[in-house]
View 1: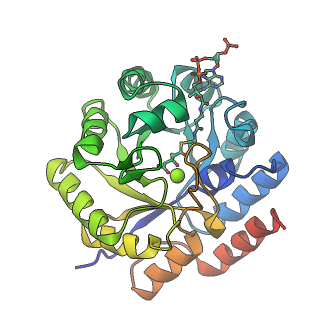
View 2 (view 1 turned 90 degrees about the vertical axis):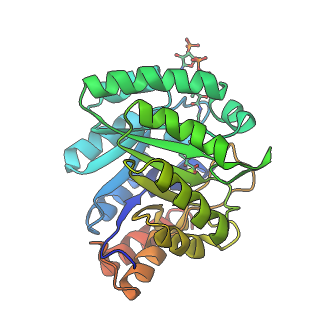
View 3 (view 1 turned 45 degrees about the vertical axis):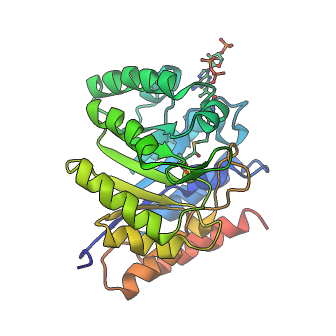
Length: 283
Ligand code: HMG
Ligand code: MG
């Protein structure tokens, strides 16, 4: 019934840090990535090529990408538009991530464009990224509810997923950006998505605002999801999603999967060290 193994994608150095108002020195960010690279986690989101005025914490994307290349890890960088993609290609990023909201208000606030405009921009980004042999991860944000518009319907999510599929996303991460999902909606939504898009690799991305994230993880597992985003020490949030708190924590998730005898390839001891270091950044 449960899978033998799952993949955990570490988003701490990006989603974890982007919401922190205190700028974390680039050298400290590099150290965090180095700690994480020793845990056995296969992929880490280490950079975001967004506008430095919009998210000052991610202003060192070029240095972080260069360091990730040096370290030889498989890493992901956020590229919401063609300008971002150009910067990522210059930095030899192997895997990119686009993000589009399922609601108009959030998408406007987050990337200053309508959903239609963002999807059109994604067409261009996907086309060029494919020509450069980059792997493409695509996020649907506000996949369950939205702080501005309330409940999000299945059709709103499907619209964005359909577009990502048509343009050739390698995987689609559905985000509970504001942490308001519950196990029932998670189970129903992922089951339906898997029925409607049998060829897509879905990832579940939970924020733990209501402390339901682990319950939501299990509901997603039961719906057949086997990839999860998480953040070391449970850091995280989105500056454009008021009230959203950290992602589900990587160490909690690994402990849960270990106890359930589901393989992650990640070592709890090394993770503990990474977590202690992550926490020390904010003490
Ligand atoms: P914009 O202002 O609409 O861009 O920003 P524009 O195309 O109108 O251009 C204006 C100026 O910005 C121009 O410069 C561009 O060159 C420059 P000027 O000619 O005036 O000197 N510009 C850029 N500079 C650097 N990097 C770029 C870039 N693009 C344009 N990429 C933009 C649009 C998307 C860039 C901006 O709104 C932005 O950076 N937003 C930040 C969004 C963000 O990072 N949100 C958090 C991540 S999403 C999230 O957390 C959710 C997720 O975790 C999943 C979940 O939980 O659901 C992924
Ligand atoms: Mg997030």
